[in-house]
Image (cartoon, rainbow, N blue to C red; front, side):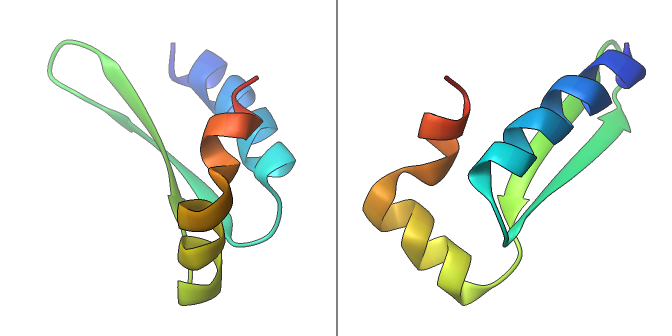
Length: 57
């Protein structure tokens, strides 16, 4: 399952562009994937333009 999350999450992070990173980790009952910003510039860009939400489509 982590492999699938890695694959799908990496595609979303790449569509989002520079300043976004993917983290995949095992949980107690399910795996988790998180895409987050890496700097202030990408945080502001995401807040203004909803970059991550648009990258999911």
